[in-house]
Structures are given as structure tokens and as C-alpha cells.
Image (cartoon, rainbow, N blue to C red; front, side):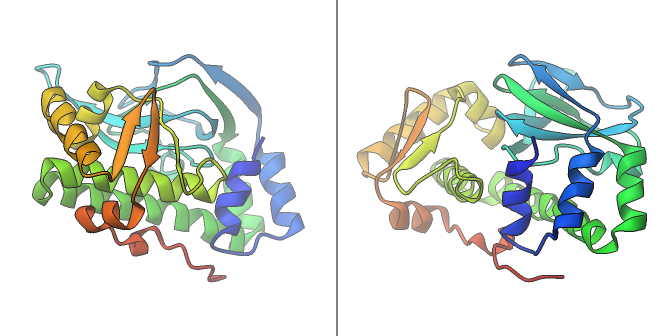
Amino acid sequence: MIDTLLMKLRKRDEIGPDEEQALRDAVSQARDYPADLTFIRRGEELDHSTLLVSGLMCRYKDLRSGERQVTELHVAGDFADLHSLTLKKLDHELMTLTPCKVAIFPHDNLKRITEEFPHLARVLWFSTNLDAAIHREWEVSLGRRDAVARLAHLFCELHTRLEIVGLADRGGYDLALTQTDLSECTGITPVHVNRSLRLLREDRLVEFRERRVIVLDRPGLERIAEFDPAYLYLERRPR
């Protein structure tokens, strides 16, 4: 149930057997959600946090006009709302983009971990700091990168994050998103997404077809995106 979470945590830190068992014991139940379901809404009082076991989900905010901005994508092994432990409610929505399996961590169980396993508490705190780093990089994309670079950067980021949990190889990865979804991630129109994807394909950098990202030239893609994975803190540094 939490194997992808452990892969993600152990990429950066040591997780002992007692800590692993504490995480396993903290899960109260598993749930299956269909695609395109907003399962947590802003302002809703929360007593648990959600770990994504499989699938793809996002955080988003809507305007009254109906326009949507995705603020982060979550892949297997991510806590989608660990910050709700302290905030108790979110200022944004959480939605599945594909069918998803999740594990539910009651806040009382997470509090117990913070009290009994201080190192594990710091590791989980690191996860929320990592989310903030990803948000900052997305802000740079939305504010300064052009359309082609925004898509390239998103593809590079997801390639790196999915590799950590064994869901990508050098040749690419599955990405069950539509061009509308990519539009809502990058803040450009679907028409502009289509045009930018064509340019990336013509430059033999990447192809996006049949919901799979096929990486043709990763160094070239990283170059056009100005992608520096430092913000993902990939080094293994026990804290």
C-alpha cells in the first residue's frame, strides 16, 4: 500500500524498519476514486491526509469564469494534502485526473508519528517543503517561460519524479493527460499547447501521443526548458 511512498522517501533519506511499520500502521483504509473526481473541496474540514498509491491527481483553483489553474500534479507516492494536518482545511481543490487508489492517514495517526518518531516527522515535513519548491518552479514557468519551455519543463519534471518511483525509464513514461489538462497546468490555451507540442516534436525532442511521453532527446529537452533538478532535492542526505 505504501511501497511507492517508501521508494520516494528512501531516495532522499534513511527509513528504519520501525519507521516503516509506523507508516504502515497509520493507514486506516484504502479508497478507489474514478477519474475527474474532485474529492476534496476548499474550506472542507479535514481529519485525514491522502496518499496517492496509483494514478494521477492534481491540486487546482477555479475562477468564477470557470477557468481552472492546476497548481501541482501528484504522482504515486505523493501525499496530496499532508499540509492539511496543520491547516485542517485547504484553500484549493484536489481532483483525480485518472482512476486513483489512495491510502487514508487519519490526522490522529500522523500526530502520533510526530510524537513517537521525530526523525520520521522531519522526513514528512521535508515532503511539504518539497511541494513548496515545486510550486515555486511552476510559478517561474507561469510567469517567465514561454509556451514551449513550459511544456518542456513539465515533461522534464514528471520524468524525474516518476523515475524515483519506478514509473519511467530513459525512453519516457505514461501520462494520461489531455491537451486541455496540459493547458490547465501551463496556463496556455489548448490551441497553443497543440502548436507547442508540434514544435517539440519537429525539433526531435519529445513526442506526446496516445497518452505517453516519448523522450527523444532528454539533454535537448532539459536545455530548452532550462531544467535544473536541484529544486527536487534528489541527493540522499539523512536529516
